[in-house]
Image (tube, rainbow, N blue to C red; front, side, top):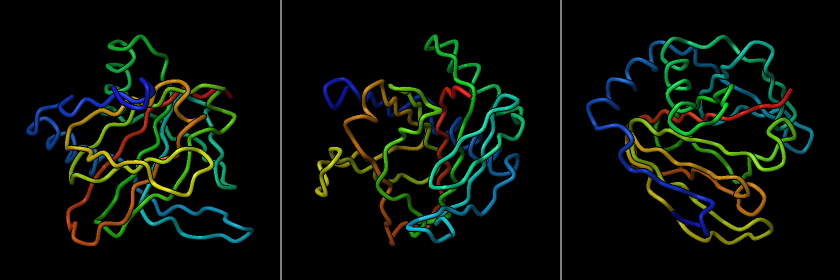
Amino acid sequence: MLLDGQLHYYPSLLDPQQADILYQQLLQEIPWQTGHVFIYGREHLIPRLQAWHGDPGISYTYSGKTLRADAWTPTLANLCQQLNQLLGLQLNAVLCNLYRNGNDCMGWHADDEKELGENPQILSISLGAERDFALRRQGSSRQSGTLRLANGSLLDMRPGMQNHWQHSLPKRARIQQSRINLTFRTLYN
């Protein structure tokens, strides 16, 4: 338990062999795409591949783009169902990111879009290469800490975290392996 209980980290939700099998399934099963975002009125390619899956009619808007959910793949649907049963949640969508190597990254942000409600809970599964998850307080420009996300780990960003903290996945040039990150969430459309 970290950040006064707003962040829970489980380094071995899956054993390494399970995580590797799941990684390979998702690498083949998900229709990975190059995404775009609007920053300061200009469109930019995002430095990773992504996919958005969820229940019918679910859409998600961030950085000036609206994503309409593709149907669940069998593996993603199974994972979502297991997480809902395990934690008593009603997750209905997942944002999938494929970081091809250490040059792919995610900038500072909080998952605080209106579709997520006032105090979203977001579950993040990491598969593949270990990467740093950087944290800083909302309104600060200084990084407060880093958590190394292991293959097969689960990061539970509890209600309230997105209101007080920002996070990023910084570049790490020495990392040559890829990583899949699945962020399950509940959207209210």
